[in-house]
Image (cartoon, rainbow, N blue to C red; front, side, top):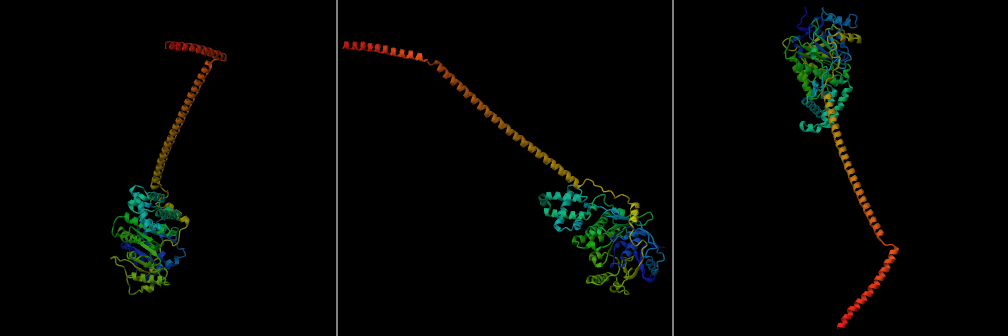
Length: 537
């Protein structure tokens, strides 16, 4: 009868020193390391087979495209059948047989699986700044944009929303600088360029709704087998920051979503992160602290995290210290870095007098590994040289047709297929902009109408003044005309009253006669007066 409390990993020849992963300790994380071609993928596939058979859902990042074979049973006609059968016989696996797993395929780009989306708000400024490779100042501006959006009730769901929000923050830079600290338009511009670069890499496919419900990762099928969630990451690897940030986001979301359960009899979910060095490469201290915190605490949520990498020194010490289950395949010691990796790996195992770890690491055959797993009491087992069991599922990729059948017949259906674009920051800010533009246009129109009215009034006043001046001139002209008419009339009257030439002759003659008579009368009078006088004397 199969033991459902542990998962067989492998043993020495003839079944000596069997190594099994205690399911109760499988949430204490692990490491699968080794150089290219030493059997890491086969080991990973065998562990996923076993977890699924025991009802544990898993998530695996398929970097090379060959883990899709988890969905199909291996075949006796496959080229590796004889090798696997021989290894199973060598380690005494009498019950080994081929079998498939219930698989759900996912793809950030929606091409080789169901789309995976989240919102910008759920991602948060820290992880987004990591994805965009922003410096501290730019990250600060990004954080201010998130804070303003929260304060004003603006949802940031996709890249369009974030870009609109940054424009909004840039326009209010002077105001926000006084309240939150320096908001430079140069930093806003740098973030905008980084977003354009992310969009060109296909990052806009990742942001939007419907957002992923992580409970869809935690399902089992009708036979009680854990669902294997396979992320198509071959194309995603062209954008390593997006890949690393996405994986870290999922861990963070699980940590925030799942309840505390301590150490369950078996994990709620196990994550397998291939090319794990990408998660830590060039990561700032703040991000490394977050990774270390999530890895340390997510264990209590019943989630196990397994890193797959070529060299164990790719994993930071604080994170490596949390990895209790270890499978170390062969390492090469050609370079100083390789030699450092061998020494580091040798120091991480619980010693075993019968195993020279530093020497054995460079001598391991393909499919052979140094294994140390947590025991029921939580202590690591002494390191053991182990032949890893062969997987039950197909080693190698599915055909596109096989993959499509799996996608269309799984339990997810079309839940995530259609993009939803509800009202969010972009639409609200655009509407406000339109309202402001309309108000400005109305104000401008009102101002221009007032100016036109004032101009018309001015023109009317000028016209009235000109008319008044014309009327006054007309009146003056009429007065002058009347005066001229009166003058002419007077002149005509005088002319009419002036005597004719005959009258003038008569008048002249009359005046002469009168003058002569007058002189005679005067003389007579004078003589009379004088004569009286003299006579009196």
